[in-house]
Image 1 (cartoon, protein in one colour):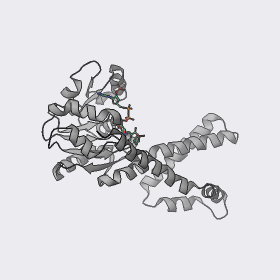
Image 2 (cartoon, helix red, strand yellow):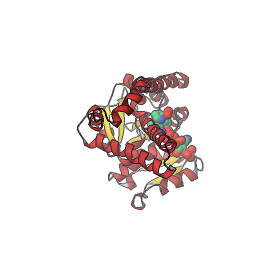
Image 3 (cartoon, rainbow, N blue to C red):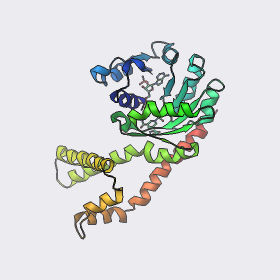
Image 4 (cartoon, rainbow, N blue to C red):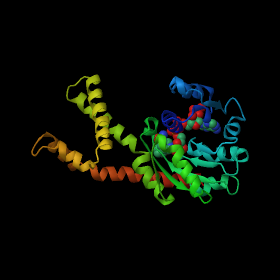
Length: 270
Ligand SMILES: NC(=O)C1=CN([C@@H]2O[C@H](COP(=O)(O)OP(=O)(O)OC[C@H]3O[C@@H](n4cnc5c(N)ncnc54)[C@H](OP(=O)(O)O)[C@@H]3O)[C@@H](O)[C@H]2O)C=CC1
Ligand SMILES: O=C(O)[C@@H]1CCC=N1
């Protein structure tokens, strides 16, 4: 996830020499570097697996630190770097299932933190990143987080009690759209298209529709209705979706994601 955010902010013009990143394995570090365009490879990338001081060194003197390991590892990582942070360094966690109180508890007293929920379209500058500031995060520090993250996508402020719902819609949401593309490809194959054609049609249709949603000020319903000729083909297809319970199913899926986020907070609290 943080590789996507980093790619978005570098593509948006952030100076690579101002960015430091760590992974655990040297192989991941190499993959991360190779994933960047050549003119952005000036980022410093360290591996904590081969250098015990890597994480602490990476955060020394930093104004903003983005924590992006799996939820189970975030608090250990926070404790590991706590003593190396500037007292006013802003620590932003992207982890699901870790709340502000847990983060603040793992860091030095008074350290400013933000609990965030981003999503992977950040890689192409089209993410949505919701920020819930902690107890010690000032308005200036929240503004700094907006400034740093704006090249990765749309940045919004939410209350911490809204993060579960945000996770259910935008955090997990890219997977819903990819799942639809997968299902469309399978349907195309079932109707006799070859794999490559079905895949191309599904990918271009979902990504093209996404572009229309982004570019047009029209709402999703208006865009849908513009495809539905009265008594035409799309109307038949949409009726099949509605009869199959797509609207209710989507709410059920989003609630399942949100509930899992809340459940993880309980599992990981210490
Ligand atoms: N994937 C998504 O769509 C989203 C994920 N998130 C959150 O992002 C976080 C990361 O998820 P995701 O990106 O999918 O996970 P990944 O496993 O893809 O990435 C985790 C990265 O952290 C590195 N890492 C693990 N432990 C350490 C350590 N001790 N020191 C330095 N680096 C370490 C890993 O390195 P290595 O590969 O070498 O192990 C890897 O590069 C999670 O907390 C998740 O909840 C939030 C929103 C969306
Ligand atoms: O699946 C997860 O737990 C993470 C958080 C939101 C998207 N991916």
